[in-house]
Image (cartoon, rainbow, N blue to C red; front, top):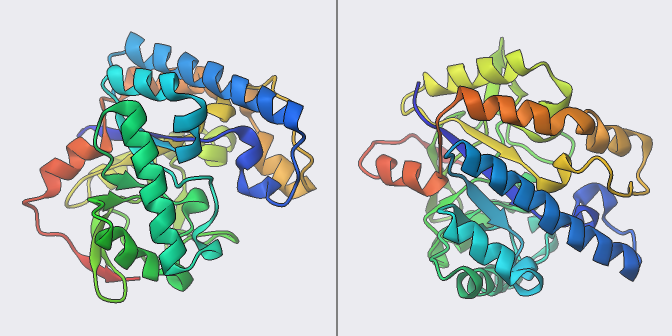
Length: 288
């Protein structure tokens, strides 16, 4: 089997979309910031133990509040990529303000890490058909690849008919290399199995089946994603609706043991290394 791309979306727990609009108290923000550092370092230790490399999509503000953490991630050989400046969905921007957000995030991450930032993932996979203009902005800002389009049906994100493997996403006038997360094809539908709540809820056999299917595509490129806060079961819980509370905390106590099992099963790679291998490959083009 080919290497599997391993990725992490790094933001403090209170920034998640399910908590949007809630005013987090300053003391709770400080606690979430401290816990972010600790949970991310636990993951770095697990990756080092298995000689696994990953891509970390990091919120730009964290490069200011946790510069040593960003430096240490880069020093361990992992890729630093952008997860926006402050974790706002693309829907909340214009093309001009989105471009500024990208520049601000990339500059902060590059200064903290000393490495070039060429990859992007939108918060909550929020590049959808209504925000297809973001593809043009990413290309104009010089990013090499994006990982924001999830080929599934969901109430918050997704383009269900997008390709399941790497493709060229076309916006209004520009294209961008897109790396979608793993899905499992069941009949006419794609089941999301790549990480997050799906990893904590579904049997691991579904994730393995999705990785196998995606690795059999042409070109093969399976991608998984996780968040450091998902490996911190003792963190204070957010005031969420019943559905959001279930999605956010289901299976959180078993996430780390499950993740360590994955580290023994697959050979992992950074997204940028897979991007390099794809540069000479013909890829399907898809109008977003």
